[in-house]
Each structure stands twice: as structure tokens, then as C-alpha cells.
Image 1 (spheres, rainbow, N blue to C red):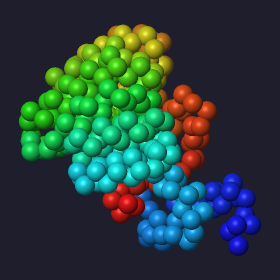
Image 2 (spheres, rainbow, N blue to C red; image 1 turned 90 degrees about the vertical axis):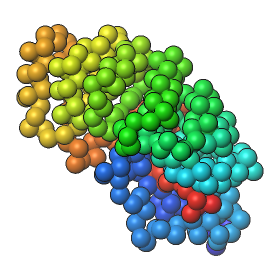
Image 3 (cartoon, helix red, strand yellow; image 1 turned 30 degrees about the vertical axis):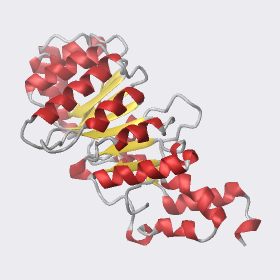
Image 4 (cartoon, rainbow, N blue to C red; image 1 turned 60 degrees about the vertical axis):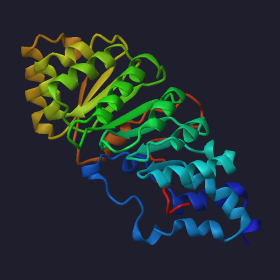
Length: 297
């Protein structure tokens, strides 16, 4: 029966069953829900129907990849080495762990990767060897940064320095950077310095953190970047007037104040922060993707 269906039709059917939205995939941890409803939790089993379904559906399964443990990273790296066409299908990468040496191989084998979620929740015993080797091979358009969840350690500090260096000097395609929540003021200054010298056009943070960035001077530093077009503040829309007042009190030019946009964190407005990749295969705002982890392997 499926042999009668055109490949485009079969791909659309499998997409409906397999993929989830970018907005869900890139939600920060406190809002991060299960990406696959119960009825779709075994969606990978669809690929076992036939060799044709497997060939068409596997790239869909790996359009978005989540890594949280070393064994996840190793398993995905092995699959991409064995099936290079799958690596070309990867567009989004969520890094919550598994930052060891195999991450470099994933970076090499995903030439069309355009959006990265990076958690800086790194334990002192975790390896970041792969992060150091992978970063120079990447050139994301969209970057999501989750704050440090552990007590400061050498690995977190090293990962943060590595991140700032690449935001400033290496990732020339970077257009959007989104923060999960508050960084301490000194870290904010360091990131602001990186953003001021970067290629970003859009910066997004929590509305309450924006006020700290404004009064602490970091926001003015970011606005030294002539390419910056929009600052998106997530949170209660009732606070918009407070932020605009703070901007005026801190002598921000009217042209810069107009660049501020406010969205409710409880809506899917954050999905609009995804900028298209440079190639012509970018997804629209209602596109769908799937988290791939060891359960998909």
C-alpha cells in the first residue's frame, strides 16, 4: 500500500507523526515539557514498517537532537558516521550534557546545523573536551544559553570563556542569542562585551533581568553593536512600562528604546525568535521537529 504513495506524501504523513515544534524543543528547562505526547512516544517504531519508511523517516527523526549523557553522544555520533545523509538532516542541537570527545564528530557530520541550545550546568567531574573541539566547527544562527545551575567550578568558567570567545570572534552567522535567566552582574558584563563585538541582530532575556542589564550598564554596552535590531524581553507584559521608564531614566536614545519588544513567557511568542538559516531549507514558524536521544537509537 505505501509503495503507491508518492514519497512527498509519505514524508508528510511521517512528519505529522514524528516531529514536534521548534518552540517546544528550545524551551528552557523550567518550561520544558515532554516533547512527544504519550500517543507518539513510540513514533520511532513507525520506521520499522518497511525499508522505505525507514529511509524516508530517519532524517526526520534526527532533525533535532538532544544530548544529555556521554552515551547519548556516542550513540548519535556512531549513527551519523554510519549514515552521513542523516547528519545532513540535523538542524537543531540541544546540549544538556555529553560534552565529551564524541561531540566533535557530531559537529563535523552536521553541516546544516543552525540552532544550538547550550546548558552551562557543568559539573566539575564532567568532560568538556568535545565542546572545546566542536565549537570551532560550528557556526549557529540561533543560540540559547541556559544559566549555570551548579556552584562555580573550573569547567563552568572554561565553558563560559569558550562560549564568549566564539560569540565574539568565530560564529559570524550568529543572529539571535537568548538567555534563560539571570547571570550575576560580572558575568553579564563579560557576555555584554562579547555581544557588543558579535554579529547578533537580536538579544532576548527575562524582563526582570533586562532591568538589571539596563541599570548595570551592560545593555548600553550591547547597543554598541551597530547590527543589533531588536531586544526581546520575556515576562509579564504589565512590566513593559517599568522597563521603558528605566530606559529613559538611564538616558537611552529613543531609537534604541524603540528596539525593545515585550512578549509573555507563557505564550509561544518565543517561537518567533528562531531566525531562518542561511540556506533555503529553513523551517517556517509552525515547522515541526523531534528530539532524538538514546531512545531513538
